[in-house]
Length: 280
Image (cartoon, rainbow, N blue to C red; front, side):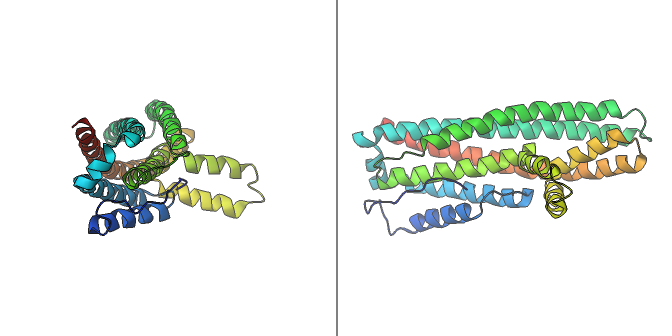
């Protein structure tokens, strides 16, 4: 996860409190995970991020933490963090909408495949699925740009107190995890690698195989690839493969939806807590 992390001063409220160690441990684990590329690894990061925001909300209950946030010299940075949290919640909404749209198209296509006995006449249904995916990817592309905008703001921290430094670190890790989620949903990472490697496929066959394995690890992208293959060849064997891949994709989507829903609730809780502190 590419991000700037900042040293904390000794003014950290309740520095010896176990909650501070919990925050540091979770931050370090999420930083070390790098860019998650499978649904299980992304789900694990989402769970860690949920816990991290919960720990931060506990830290925000300490009187010294609240005193630090209401200092006039910290006001501008607090406002920037609140603006960033609002944008991150918008990104969460975009990700959840993309998952919902993909799930609905997946379920609709599964229903059609169950009703039809043969492969004939399914090309139009497959194309509808791919068209929906294409529209969803455009929305994700915009959300990824918004994440980059928030990340760029974190690049020049200046002098911050310990509490602000923690909140900035949490925001930076949240950006990285959400970037991994969006890239997984759209298949951006695996697709771009596939495109680059295809240019030198004869010389780099081994790397191409590695890329194909990475695509298989992405259930959503694997289902999309199966649909594309089926359009080229109306073969019943391919249709059966599509059904299998769509089922795996739906299960993966369900897990990510639940993870993002819980994360959004905890982010909102933290945001409300900060707003209440500075408005007192």
